[in-house]
Length: 313
Ligand SMILES: Nc1ncnc2c1ncn2[C@@H]1O[C@H](COP(=O)(O)OP(=O)(O)O)[C@@H](O)[C@H]1O
Ligand SMILES: [Mg+2]
Image (tube, protein in one colour):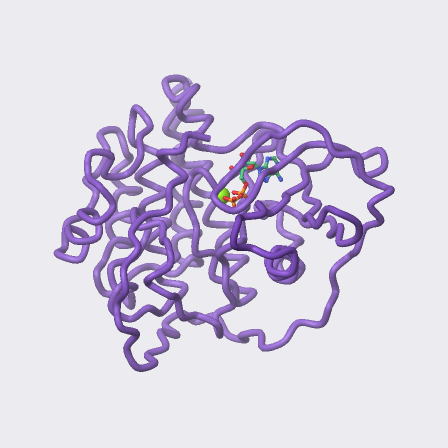
């Protein structure tokens, strides 16, 4: 994974305002406590092999859980992290994932290894890499309809998360994996439940995917995910694939976005998709579409595209 895409940027201290909770979306129940439903796996049942990915928080290896090919996500032991902190972040991500495992477009958590020297998540393996890798390597042969199909699967997974009270918080092409033709959202390391929605703006943030109001409210919402979904739509259609605002440093991105600048519509993006992207970019989070609305619209766009393709044959 190119370091340029992974970098988390901007360390800044912004004073946290008084609590403003943006509960804008019609999704109901927020979760307060989660019983420990994690499936603990005996380390003798696993066999870890080569590294297949790495991100800002962990390394991912392929291997076996008994006879089944799986992925293992091991949190990086940073200099300032104790084994306890590592254990806590694995457990946190696992607790969240336990709540949302069960949708085709979300990576399934198979269990956690939490004995012996390694603490790691055991995940279903997505053998075909991430969407950013696909678009970098094979961009020229990926059609518009295939791009819409990818977008549709992202929003179907996101709708599921939102219905379960989870804000993903790190939606980006690098966190969408492929298993054959099926796209799966991964990386719940930064995710939050909707009742744990304050962020620390002095911590590193993925600025390029961040809704502008986050800097002033420090409050995550389903609508902040929808802003990131807008940036992801841009990534899906920008040819050749590139990092959003590639020529600008993160601090400048923050400034221009807060002043109202937005990523331009990529040439070749279907106009109906550009309407959704631009609605996701609305400065007013209440005016962005919900995941359910965007899923319905993208589903219709995809159906129409496929119908047109068939009738032109
Ligand atoms: N279940 C999986 N199957 C295959 N590859 C994976 C899987 N999970 C993660 N990866 C690979 O590892 C990379 C980093 O994983 P991720 O969960 O995004 O970690 P981080 O929190 O460090 O960003 C991904 O971009 C992907 O290439
Ligand atoms: Mg990641």
